[in-house]
Image (tube, rainbow, N blue to C red):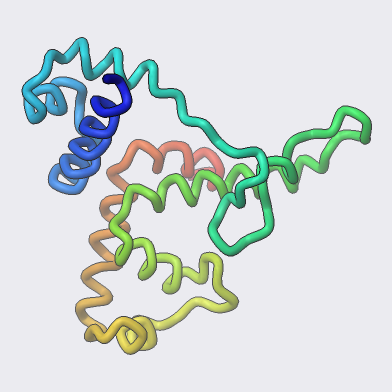
Length: 160
């Protein structure tokens, strides 16, 4: 059953990614799940990600894949908008490697998806945490983002 196997692999992937603070290898997944490495590689290779054309990129927003796909009956799209959309998409993908709390803290601190960035104190009040604990969560999340493979893609956008 490929779906069941994929679900087990995805669950183990998330757990190991949290533990190692990096993406686990196929060998590490196979060892954890006690299945052959080839089965992990085959299952991951078959599991193409399906995306709805009209589903929003970010929950609560109106932008969807249909909004950014080029319509052949209209003139070409503005490359600056393409760049911004691609950058926003990469940021969301990078943030998806964080825990929910880390993601919330980073978004609020840097003003991603909100009107204005928030201070560590304000974020602490929102979550019932001390300023110091929020700083620790933020720093750990930033380190995690720096070590993730996705940071290489973001560096291309940011010229770093």
